Image (tube, rainbow, N blue to C red; front, side, top):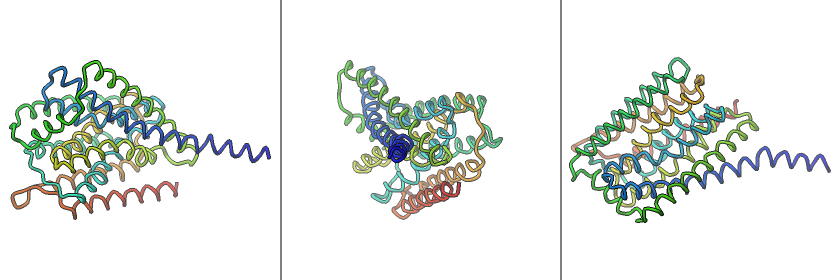
Length: 339
């Protein structure tokens, strides 16, 4: 009897509790991310920051706050593989899962001239990322290079948004989106911003602990957990934003959020494990996972190129992106069960 009770207690502590903590953390992460973004946008408006700058910094990069916090906590927890897997997996999910589903629901017509300039930048940053890791190492120098590139890219995006034509669809959709964010007083905005940030940190910590415990129990590499559960979980704010934008016909804003999120993941989030916990890169990440992310980024660029005078991502192309994502998930499953 004592043996049975001991086995049940072991199962609870080793599997059930970590799983519960992981998914509770995930739910809190999604909720607090919305609170954080809404309150940050409200604070920025009270401080009279230009709406398009809010669009780039708060709406564009704000959806990557979950990935950022998970990466920092994973690095401090001496689990850099979890952080790196989160970056690569989130970018794959953003393109294959989120863009794929959105295009299937409704073909995406890209009108903004700004987005057509951002696509090549994302591809270039993706290539630079793999070049930095070709030595199978993600070290402090790599992290510093990524931070410098982040500053340069953000500076360019802010400048480009300031100079873009006011009638550009991206400008119009961003202004419409800001109007729909809840109006709050300054004190309430600061309070919710602080509350959202605290819960974001707590939920990210819960997710990292749960993920590490599950990986250790099932003897699955932390990288696999980062590429799957953590990556999809931290991409849920982007999915929510994409579905909302698609319903309102704001295709350019939705694409802009995906590009901004993927850029922020590669530059700000990937730099965290490099600066906090420099580590070796798993060979499978270099030869399988990152190249798949790179291929999907190139595919997104190709399907978004103008054809016959307009740029449109069709339902067929969305289906192919989604099939690619499902195929990648199956590949990770077989990698996990084969050790």
